[in-house]
Structures are given as C-alpha cells and as structure tokens.
Amino acid sequence: MAALEEAYMASLIAGGLAVTADVSMIASGILEERHPELAGKLGAVAMVTGLGSMAGGLKAVLSSAAKTDMLAM
Image (cartoon, rainbow, N blue to C red):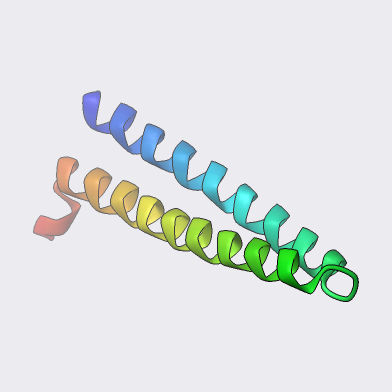
C-alpha cells in the first residue's frame, strides 16, 4: 500500500509541474512580441518544470514497477 501512495504522490507532483510548464509556455508565447525578455524567462521556467515533470513521472513509474515486481518479469 505504501508503494502506491509513494507512486501517487510522485505522479501528483509530476502533474503539477506539467501544468506549471504548460502555463509558463503559453504565457511565454503570448508575451513574446511585447516583452521578449520576460518571455525568455518564462520559457526557461517552462523548460525546467517540464524536465522536473518528466523526472517525477519516471520516478513514479519506476517506483511502482519495483514495488509490484513488474521489473522481475
């Protein structure tokens, strides 16, 4: 049961980071012409949070797989 809770928490964090990345990228695109410096910073935020989301999702999958012996197959 603890494995599922850990995987759930990692998935929840990864999802939150993914939403942050998406919103930052949309805002970056909107501001690109009028405020290019701010758009660049938002693009960097989107990239970092997107990578964090990917890492969190991978952790959730591997954690869940290891706890349920899926890797032993």
